[in-house]
Image (tube, rainbow, N blue to C red; front, side, top):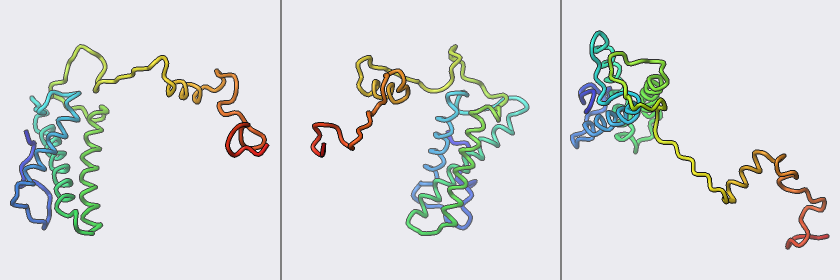
Length: 170
């Protein structure tokens, strides 16, 4: 569900394309918002009570910024116009900063239902499968804690190369 309309995009004098890419950009931006905030809030984002309008305006602006930035990047990809590309990147960065502020708790969406899973951890799955006999794990264990090995990780050779190597000049 999109949080804005295509006529709200801030394209300036860039004409809206007739191929439906504006609607696609708006919907993709809304999907990106839902994907980012969906671990913390029930999506689609809908506030109730006194904060309904500020929350709706904030989410709508994030949708507008993301959709406009991505659409401008798409429409002007072939042109070498640093100013228009900087504008598009600035819009996308502003939207991402707002999303990060919401996720970090700097902005709290009052009146929006919070996801409750019973698990105090928030976020996606975290997997760590340590293999007891992995040479890679042994390598990283030795690099991060070489004192536990007893010797230097890579022994020093005074003449430059170890005995038996193809370039040893003993």
